[in-house]
Length: 236
Image 1 (cartoon, one colour):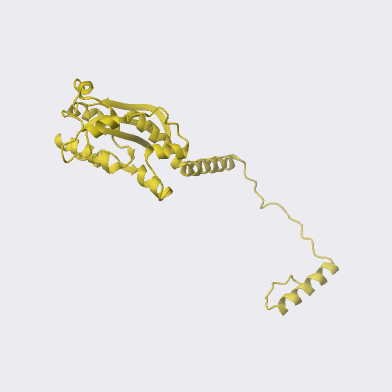
Image 2: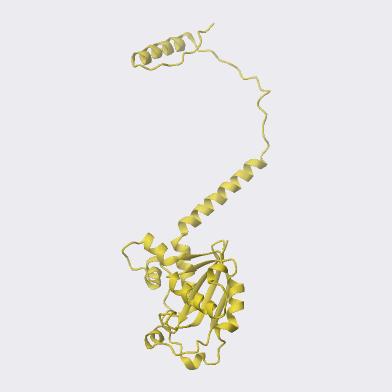
């Protein structure tokens, strides 16, 4: 299964009010393992960042001035994401921004281009109800090194989230390993030669008189308890 862990940075909090994406970071997982196939792009959002957002990501308008617009990177992004299951922390936020950008281009919503979306925030809240479940909190709880995260960055956050997701779901990984081991054992068993036991003449050893008397006494005791045992045939 191919999964893509995705994160965005934006000029503010509201796509509906005109805020735009200015950075996208993606890392690829295949069979729950990092492949090294990443996508990272800065985007000219064609507007200034809100001061509070600028404090979070630290990406200035001057830095973004010569970067491509979303329309210029959209096809490459959709090709990279095509058919993958996306893993996003607080997915409605990022998906809402991506849907708005695609809408501007007359393209269908993100859901039409991917196989599904897993919201790792919902997953974390299910596993750790009542606890802080931000990316930083999960890194601390799951012992993922986030010491290099002084500001939010889409690619770094996607890489951290990939490690967090793998650890959040490691029970599933263990189950997959058990299933794989079982399949391997089945294959090994199938490769062993089968013995045909139908031609073997197995000896029948009748009980001795002492064994027979002990068995009969046991049957009597069982009948007294209301049980209906099956008796051996009388030895002849």
